[in-house]
Length: 234
Image (cartoon, rainbow, N blue to C red; front, side, top):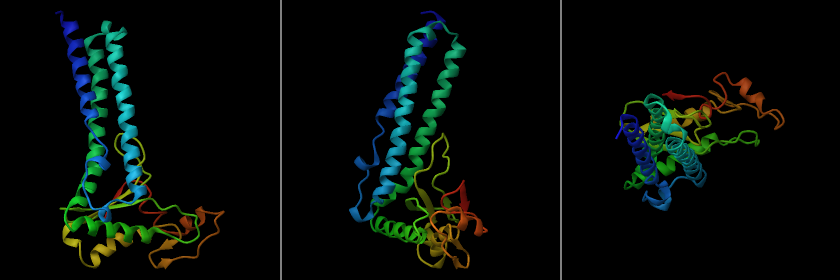
């Protein structure tokens, strides 16, 4: 077998291997065991599954197009060009698995005895802190999980995740040593402090529904700590 044909053959096998690995990734709803009381909210569960499934479908289409290209016009391309296109797919593949792990860390804990129920209650508390009267602010779904580190953090919803796409939920990371105490409540309430129509001293007057940007301008800390860019350490 010529060197060029060998390179094409090996890259096609590698692409098919990525496709097989993607096909083995299942939705969380069919592989995570948890009590109904410990489950995520329906909005959070649906948002996460929809985001991940959409990303995997797009990646599958890209891999299939690459395999078709290798068998067609790409068979005459140089090995360097074939490798360049494959490397791009490999990076997208690694990002897809990284996004899966991001949500898996938060969801897998729901199957732990007592911990899952505790986290579900924290979801409700954080969601309640974000709900504001007036109907001008649509709070995102919230997912809480425990972390071995020393500090809490918030990965905000509706922000860009690595690899593209908007984060469908707000993810609140709570250190395990802060599961009980006022520091835990401080992390949850931190989302409330930056929500539209609210400052550190408490809720401010609610603006009419026709001017949703009004409260955001009055808040010195910015509109919605949970729904703007990046992850903030607490």
